[in-house]
Structure formats: structure tokens, C-alpha cells
Amino acid sequence: MRITVRCFAVLRELAQDRYELTLDDGAMIADAWAALERAFPGVAPHRPYVRAARNGVYASWDTSLTDDDVIALLPPVSGGSTTALTDAPIDVAALERATAERAHGAVVTFVGRARDRADDDRTVVELEYEVYPEMATSVLAEIAAEAEARWGVAVAVTHRFGVVPIGEAAVAIVTAAMHRAEAYEANRFMIEAIKERLPIWKRERFADGSEWKRAGA
Image 1: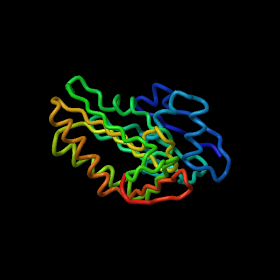
Image 2: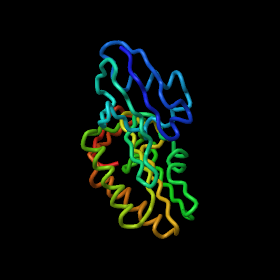
Image 3: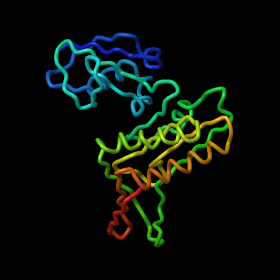
């Protein structure tokens, strides 16, 4: 089947405005992105922050396509928060760029990494995060919107799910504001709200083969 991919903003600059694709029957929006990425590798780092729409309606990446569909790939709107769940390594620099404005004199970045020690000092060899994605996506957006409304900051946040190797980021939060106090306070609020409200669970795998699972980031 043949579909049309529409790219906007930075994606248009990295790829092109309209791109025609031929895909196998049963293909999904994720397959269309994969084909675009093969043709224009520069779009790859933006995948966690892009929303997709099918024929003018927001759609999930696993939405099935039919002949003559038009897929729009939409980066975050300027001034709005950037929120994402991903099973890939987090690009912290991309989050910082997403909040970059000349008026922002203060940028606070928090990165929560997978560490090799548990609270009881046992050796951790791997972390795994289980997420309820349909709910987590909206909850993460709500938390970011609260921070923006309370402190007037720009927010970019990504939480990783699946296996997170030791030393890699499990969550990254960037808050940017005119002044440092607002940026610090919003960032602290974000991580505490994520730990309390986001439907995501952590499983720690220890060197002795045992496991421990608990709520929170």
C-alpha cells in the first residue's frame, strides 16, 4: 500500500515536507517512521518526542494503516512541554535543546541513573521498569503542565521503561526559566510527582540472582 508522510518543523528540515512510502499490508505507523528513518537518519533522535496523527487524528504508533493514509509527524509545539516514555537510551541534550529560549537564564537538569547498589547495599546488576503506557503518557503530561502553570517554566521530561543498564539514565527532567529558583523548584516537584503518581514500577536484579520490585522511579 502507498501512504503519504507529512513532516513538520524540525522534522521537515531533516527530511522533507511530504514523503511517499510503499509499505506492506498490515503495516503500522511505527513502520512508517522506521521507513522514514532509513531514508533520513537524522530524524532518529527525535522519535521519543514526536506525536503521530493519521488522517488528521492523533494516533498511537501501533495504529494499522490502509492505502492512501496520510500520516503527520508532529514535534512538540513551541512553548509546550515535551514529555515522553521510551525504551531507548535517553538523549538528555535533546531535552535541553527542547527548552532552549533566549529568555531562559536558568536551566536545571536532573538525571536519575540506574545505580549498582541497592538501599540495603546489595549489588544490583540490572534494573527493569514496567509501565502502564496508556495511563502513564497522560499522567506525565499532567505533571509537566502543573509545573509549567505553577512556576512559569518550560519542561522536558523522558522516563525510560524496559531494561535499563547500570549507569544509564532511567529518567531525565529539564526545567528552564528566567530565574534559578523557579527552575529548581519545578524540577524538584517533577521528580517527586513522578515517583508518587506515575504508573511505573521498578524491578532490581541482584548479583545473587534474587529480585525486588517496588513502585516509583
